[in-house]
Length: 143
Image (cartoon, rainbow, N blue to C red):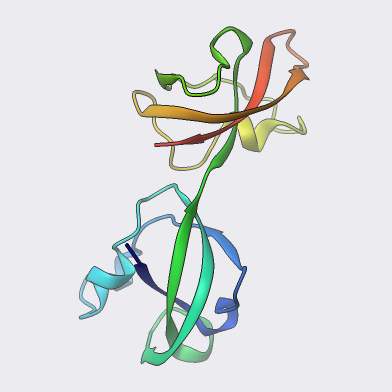
């Protein structure tokens, strides 16, 4: 199945990756909101192909969006090492870390990923030395 989305003209390049954060307030009245809002909040996508159709847009640079085909990508995440087994489905609880300067902060705290979300581990990448002494693994997951 092909997934269609609209992205700002500046970012409409094959291979461009982005995290969908949801519709902005300005988009609520737009007639194209169902296409722009068809992606799942928090997930990462890559543009596979670009279609020629452009639409006017009040919030994007160049005042237009371009129709693209996207594919969902797995999300890189740190989880407790004891549950880091490929194929495992688990309920995400978060790590509750506030070390903003830590090099792992962005993969410990995935924007848009809520506690209680069911995730599937696609691949275990490596064990990580957490500054707080937690035994963690870097994995690729989907929900």
